[in-house]
Length: 314
Image (cartoon, rainbow, N blue to C red; front, side, top):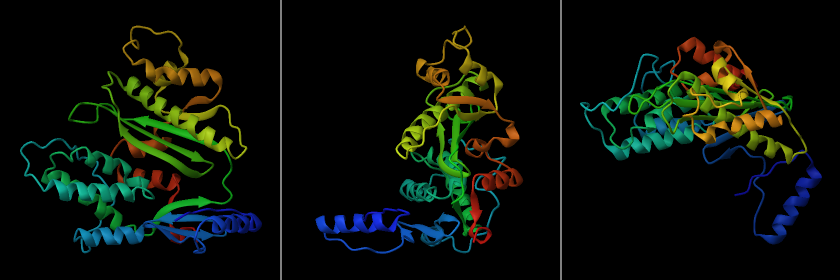
């Protein structure tokens, strides 16, 4: 199957004729459903969600009648290896994690919880399985929520980077969280455990900012294909020490242990590709990808990232 889009009917017809001249294929009309992803195209924007896929997932794991919860992961829940916990079937656990990972295609608000649970696939325990099922319980309560891409969004790229510090109880590594918006439309997001152990909060935030900068460089090249050239793309960070590290060209004793590969962000700031700015913690959108959050803050960030109920946009 090939998906293509255009706002020019003549060009679309020419493309269809060219493809049909080379291959045996037929047009299926406007895209509404593709590999579990539902697409609703409206006059003022496009809405993506996976409600049918989620219903099938609940049925698959016999959770159609489960109680709903307000957040995908409890704020006071700190997952560890649970050495004394009762083991569960690893195949079943991995199947659930894989299904949830696919669900993050349109539901990035569960990204942190799913990635956190995915760390325990080798030897899953009952507590891990319970945490993973909680994500499904959360998803059941908001089936009509998905990603909203408005037509009137402007062409301005903004990035957010955040990190927890030593959040993983297994190896004390931190988690980087980044997200990028084109105007008001979320186009990139990530929650990933860092490869090395950070020795301070500033270092953890600095590494996360480097990940955010790398994504900005890639996105700039993609946007350039559409004839849009961007410079000094803002990357918002809520740690002043990490921001100072990006501007300081001198390696002093407190930073010389940081791997060289993380310092490339300085070069791109000097070139004008990226511009790191301070943002208050309460306005840090990437916080959704690094920590379990309380209901009110979770819902606030979810809305600001463009994860909306379809009834509010139709």
